[in-house]
Image 1 (cartoon, rainbow, N blue to C red):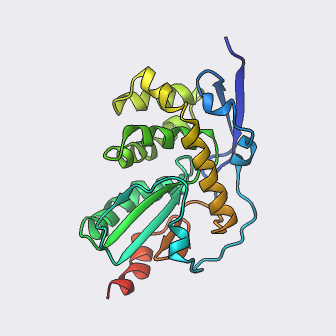
Image 2 (image 1 turned 30 degrees about the horizontal axis):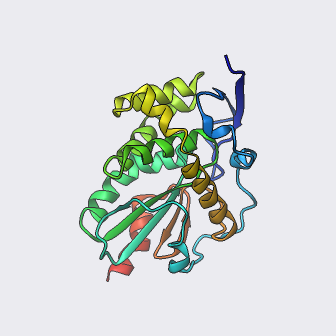
Length: 236
């Protein structure tokens, strides 16, 4: 049996974290993505907070990313909302579980907003969730991520997170074989690393969740009212 690999995972850096430091034990066989990742140590947290709330980034620059976007909403929408999220971030889960459903009803489903959820991989569990979402395909991508946000406390604090993640994946239609196959996608994992470094170095992202509303940065688990205040003037 392969020796276990112990990963120390911090909580997300926006506001007060809900999770403390969690010891995560995975075998090298279970997650081959770890075997060749020399940059794994850099997944454990953020650099210094350099961006400011309200800063505006070039929209064309924001569009140039390593992982193709999974877009929801009308391609002709006046407003584009990009969210960088981490599945292990409790503030991301708060937003997606409590705010996003009504936001989707009011803005995405009505064609007012084009919404893009981008991976920000802070640790190996984030990587696993996004690898599974990509493996599930475009139609199920957002469903997979939403399911892991809803069950975050189950797998995020589990003694054996690999088994917890697998159990939820099976509810979504994965098998043992397809689960393990998803985690061997080295090309996608490398692209997610590149996207993380771009967000930190070029976009000066300071925490998760971070939103870009037609390029304007908002950081933290925003309420529906806060998003409305930023979006509605752009729809006039």
